[in-house]
Length: 220
Image (tube, rainbow, N blue to C red; front, side, top):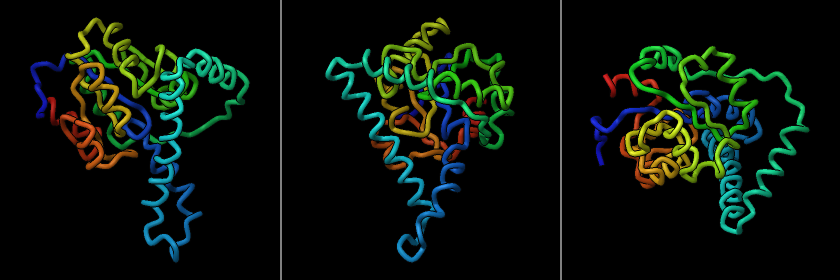
């Protein structure tokens, strides 16, 4: 279905692959381990490998919810997060995202909805001075369940005082699209991250953009 622009009252952004150029960063590091003699397109193989690593994590969280073990899973994640050493990390910003956010600021309430923990999410936002643009920041442990469940989107909508159906969820993976649709929000898939057009369309994204910054043209 095409976007109903009259419904859009608030924007919800994923981080990795949507605001942060994580896929290129990881691809650069991993593609060198795929020899061209076996993998003609090592960058593509590396990207799919990274996505494969992501998917079992989402599946495990889903299984934990299905079995009623979500509290235990959150406890384990919390325990690991507290004990993990957070080393300084340099993030990459998708080109033009900061300009886009500056121009959208004040026109819509905006939220970050990330599967990262609070430390990783804030480290990225602080590095590029993006916190000031967002009314709400929802991380992996903010809601009872994380994406692909609707809870993070519903929480962000509540905090922005906007009905979920008036939110637009922008993300690069099927997990983002599933979370948005399950919450009743409209969804935009972007191709600058981990996801690919066919799978985003199959999951029901209302619109596909080549990269996140094209959202500005869409909403002008």
